Length: 336
Image (tube, rainbow, N blue to C red; front, side):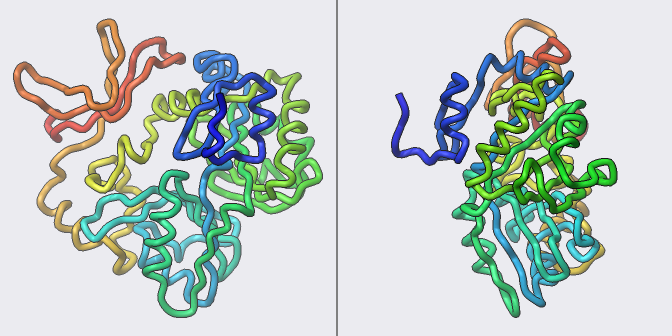
């Protein structure tokens, strides 16, 4: 039975009509699977899957001081972003630990779009607005966007006939603005599956028609809708961090294997001093991938042991449909 207290994306009726199993995810009624997680996972790896990720949050940050503000707020180098480029970054505490991970899109010289996790929208907004200084405005524009993710090796072939955007010229972490199936859209080439693919940001009123157009165009290529269950198994196979599992307010980018987002030479930013101290002292633990060689699946919170010694605990674990074995991620001391 549907829970009326949960938020719904503009595509809720499509999911229900397609027989999706709907669950509460961060206060949203979202499809966890349609035909089954394993089948959807393999479809994304071999053809393409279409995900509804409209629950994600979007903040517009603009004004003459927007670049310098975001460079102080985040560890990656915002000054090096050109319009039409995006990068992966984080919101860090003064301890160098994660409040959230996010994408930063440079829409124009003084105009940026931040994309944050659904569960953290309110907290992230308070964090960002509470630190805004100078000639900069921060707006929560989450209600202005629906977000569809088309992922898989055939994503480009499916999207190209519908998009008035040069997809071949769109590099990884690049984006362009243009029409897709008649709707004005931001088309970005990022992803959270380990496959090639595109994210489509459109007005909520256009989301349904765009979904239908993609499903129709993708049918000859084997496109299927995919739920959050497959999204999780896909990102875990690719070793991608998930907030609340691999990263949280106790975890630094050094520990999580995300040190490549930290640009220590760009100048001061929130958490820089703590990160410098930790790097000098030695990273106390590191995120590693592992496989389970016996029966069973490792789940979040399961302990990792070396004989009697507890090394750490599992952050994520699942059965991998691609490798047909149980895989996981965990933090362990550096020597392991």
